[in-house]
Structures are given as C-alpha cells and as structure tokens.
Image (cartoon, rainbow, N blue to C red; front, side):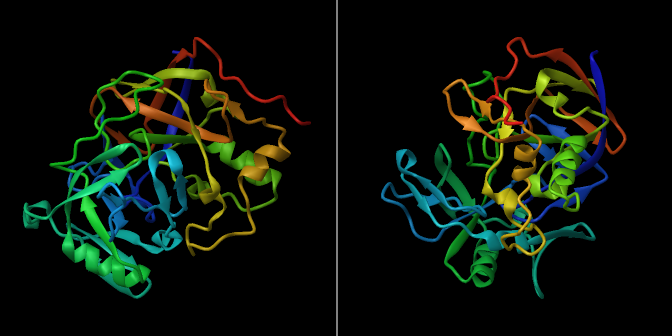
Amino acid sequence: MLLEAKVIDIQIQPLKGCGPLALKEARMTKAGVETPNGRIQDHFLVAVTGSKDERGDHNFLTQRVQVDSKKNLYVPGSPELALVKPEIIGENLVFKFNNDEVQVPQVSEDNPTRKIPVQVWEYRGQALEVPRLSEWLSDQLKRNVKVARTSDPWDRKARQNYKINDNPLRAQDGYPVHAVAMKDVQAIFDAIRAPVDPNRFRYQILLDDIPFREIHNFDAGIINGVAVFQPKPCGRCEVTGRDQVTGQISMVKPLSGLVKLGVGRWIGPDGQKHQIMGENWLPNGDTLIRRGDVFQFTDLRETPLQFEQQKI
C-alpha cells in the first residue's frame, strides 16, 4: 500500500449528459456505479438523434458537439441536457427539467419490440427505446430525440487499447468510472480565483487526501476488497467550461487553471496531447462503497505519464 485516499462524494448521471444524482452509498460493479439495489445505474439511459445516420443508426447526444469524420459523427450537441435533473422520489427515478418532470419507467414496463439501432462512440448495436422518455425529452430539448436503455440487447465493452479487460460498459465514454481528486480541483479553481466546483468534471467518485496530481502516478488500487485498475488518465473537453447548473457557457474555464499552474498536457502513446483531470477506473469486481471509505493505491505506473514541458 503506497497511498490512501478517502471517498468524499459519489454521484451518477443516469442519462448520459444529464445532471448528477448524489448517493451516500452505492454499489460499484465492473460496469460502473449504481444504487445499492441496482435499480438506478450510472449512464443506463442515452439520448440519441431521432433521425438515422448514413449507416442506419441513431447517433448519441451529449452536451458537446460531436464531429469525427472517421466515425461519421456530425452531431450537434445538446448542452440543455445539463438541465435534466435526476431525483429519487420514493422508490422511483424522476427527471425534472425546469417546471416539468417525468417518472422513468421500470424495466418491466418496456416493450421488447421497441429495439432501435444506436451508435455511441465505437459501439453500433441494438438498444431498447423508452417511448415515454423519448417524447418527454424531445419536448424539453425542442428537437426530435429518442431515449434508449443500455441493457439487453445492449452489448458494449470498455475500451481495450490501454488495458485488456472484460468490463461491460453502458453509455459512459470509454470506461465505467471516473475518479477525481479534490485537491486537484481546489488547486485549479484557486488558480483562477473562482469558487470550487468539482461538478464541472462530471465525476462518479471524488477522493480527498491525495496531494496535487499524485493520482496520476498510480496504476491500481483497492477499495473494500475489490481491485481497481487505472488504465489511463481522463482527458477533459470543453464541457468543463459549461455551468452544470444552468447549462450555459460560463466565464469560468477550469482547464485554464491547469495552464496557470504550469501543468503541461499529457502526451498519449499516439502523440496526442490532452488536458487531464482524474483517472478512468476499471473495477475488477463488485462492492458497496460509502462516503468515508478508504481507497488504497497499491501500484505505481511502470511507465510514468509523459507531459509537455511546464510553461512556468
């Protein structure tokens, strides 16, 4: 054991791109974080375009514009997704958007004939549409969208290019869990003299007691008896510059704090350069986690991350 960190917050985004749902305790599985009873899961719903692309698939939506000619992605973003606020009322998940709300149907209410072809990053496959949510979200966003579940017949795996794994994946970008260190967040907001707002980084696990940027030195750790691998740091995009409460572009640009602190971009194995905040996690089993639990970092990276030369 090389370093210990304390879990100080847990949250999930039930709909990809939506607001967070805070949890005092959660189950962390190989597929990500969920409520202890497993009924509400991180990224278990995804909004997709109402129309199909040239390959016949409905393309996924997030808060940002997706433009990638290699993946045939030319999808305008929906930053208003940030205004979809999840809440647990009784035993039900409810989405609220300003003064309107909808109760998320249970899986048992699904119509198994409503399969649609969807595309989420590299994944092109089948998903089950939830018509009530499609209609409601289309009304809120004022555009034709569909909402689908990332369960049967969904069949997607976490990315394999940094570490071979058998982790199933819902609609997360590439890995089941995003962990962020609170001292990193505090340092960059202090550098730009702005109120500290870790939600800009859309984490699932927030850790404390780790020195600035120390999280990036480690390859693995353990929490409550379950091993967790850190295959790569998490590159952050322009969404960090969007106020997650209002959905609007903010004058506060958190990534500029890294620049002010003289932190260079991470140079990936392919030579691409990325501003990073936090680490992607691959849990190797299931466990209950709570605020106050200890995460023990156990293994340093065999090859330290390479960064641009510091500018100050």
